[in-house]
Length: 389
Image 1 (cartoon, rainbow, N blue to C red):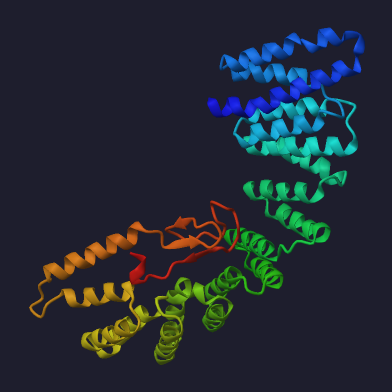
Image 2: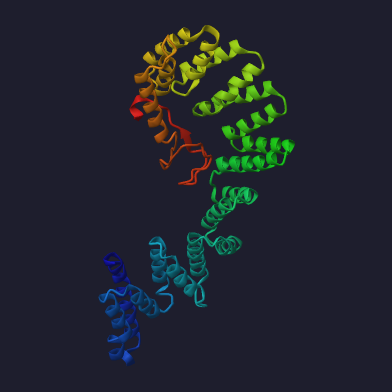
């Protein structure tokens, strides 16, 4: 309450200034204006901790003219930032209803009211106002950015593409990453309908927009795999490592399956060895352990993993080593090792496996668009190291 009262003091001061200015302009009523009863009524509400009534009084006093437009805009913006959207809407609507506004002032008021509606979740109303600004070329970049936010919320990916391209043309902004993901979203919709040919075309457009879009490459690999082209799928999957090595953990299982389906177990082993050395703690070592276990037996797998952990500490590797060591020669579980393994697993499950590189948002699953800051392709899997616990 005290914070709001302090915030209202500048409004009261502005109202008093306005009253004094009007008094000076109208000398014939100087004495009456000097003691403006409305102004003192507003101050009385303020002192009695009745901020709602005080706001109504001060807004009523601030008649809209060329001297007070900025005050109205600032006051409405203040309320929106404080979460009092209804008040912000009322102030900005009152502004727009005034015929004396200049084109620039009306455009600013429309932009502010559109942001009020957007904050209130009234997307249709906000969209109409931003489109009006778009048509009149007023505050175009701001209007387009807000429209892009609305279309993303509504999952209107075609509208997103058009708006992103317009932003690139008029504001000079690079929207290639966003465009590639819009194409991917449309491709996933096509795949749900069984339209593989259309999906391929959309995914190629995604890669043309952003050649490093691993999502497009991954989806294209799945299209080839489902079409029976395992070799093409494998080629695409392994190329993802060149696009973004941090995405390796997301495709390792599919790469291993593709090599096995082609009967290329030796090539799989060479690939995993290379990945484990070049990109430690990304999971390749675990797939390699399984392969060594399958080909050479349990002791060879334990020896390899022990040597690897000694060179490159890894919680995931330690977890797998404990699993291999938990069973004694007599077939019984080692209770202490099993307890340690269980506790380690719980610790890793409690932390987010993924994190946004922009805002720090943590998640247990991969999101292509961060749920917190709404940026695209910023969430990555977090490598597990001893320092993470």
